[in-house]
Length: 616
Image 1: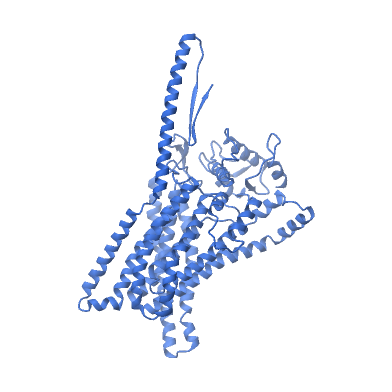
Image 2: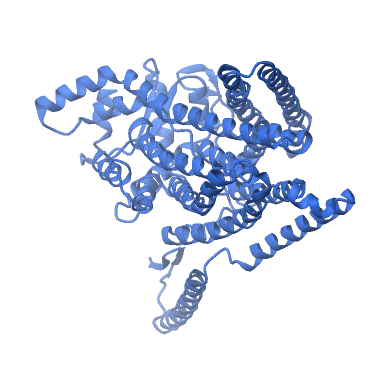
């Protein structure tokens, strides 16, 4: 590896350049395979530039990743030097090399000096200022920056809920009737914060230049496979897979599997209630300190089981979604998110709904919600921060000692080969999926049942503050640098949060209708109570959708700027078209006067940053 790295930092002209991405091959990889892979990669390079002054390092690395992902076999039947690695036209080369163990991993390198500056301004010093989102975006890309921006926004949005929840907890803990006002505030809160996040997200995307990013001609994802055919839109060769076969896999395999998993989750929930009933009966027979502690044991065990089931199901959902063979990455993400959200929502909240609306036991609901929330936060902090850090230190202990010795002796920057070896052993960051999922579940705990347990918002605020520092630490010190993910918003997760807010309206209205304070007004007729509860719930849903319609997703000043840019682009195009017509007419007249056999070739290149006119 050392020789390859030394050679890779010098191009054909002998000048040195900065390596951006590392591709680690197996030690026993055939030289014929290496030569073939390099030739295929070089075939994709066409009159490009390094763009040092135009593109950030994260954007350059994203371009390289895109080029590698779109490498597909042509006429090869197998990987040269490895007869067992079969290929067919259209098969992703990188995916085949990885599945056969020839290509171990591909990852972008950290920039040590820039990483030090980012770490210091991000998490290495305690401060009251906001996160350096622009620096995060420059180093990690828009996808990561939008996640941390949403995490920061969600934390600030929880402050009113937390401030209101503390006095409710301190002064009216046992008085459930007083939580009607808290539930009403909850209804407005969960709607308004999501609408204003859209505006905040649009402002960030506009500042970063991704607000108008289009995905009309999205490339096939690397894992997509099929018979090589032609795209009717672009006319290029790419794999083709029948949509009917994909739909059969979804509805005949994936949907039944999800339903089976929901049944298993329901069965485990009923076991939890049996354990809860046994603990209550033991405490009722002989109340002691230990039997009171015993009351919390079933909820703690159930919370741990929920996290284990969510983890197992996540791997199964990824396998099924990969097997469904979706053509586009957006379609793959939508199906994966839907599978995971349905199961996680049912697995985490089904017991709370059962306690609230079947058992009508608000004391047990409060205890279960508190136990589930606190236990899940402790487990998430351990799994996401402490465990990766401990494993990383243990794995790289020997390597770090060697590096420190060399740095002490040479008093120089870490050699490239040592940096690559050190980063190659780091854990791989799997993306923002799990981070958004955690925030989604926390949002559910707060918006659905926080009127019963007002401290839920306080606990989530504390969790989010530690989450900012732990996630920043992981990104800078524990994980390899991830490839950037250009994004204009948080994608399908916006719809997920909005769906949760709709469910929150129904849940809180039902809790208000069940309160003795409201029932006192409808003592003679339960039907009237149900009628008015449903009417209020429908009215609030209507108000919610009206608010969503009235509050613009994009701020007015940004709409004006976008309209101005579009107008200026059209005006520039008109002027260029007029200039071209005038020049063509003058060229035609000049040719007729001089009667010379001379050809004029005009090539018009339309780019996002203008129009260039080249004469040959």
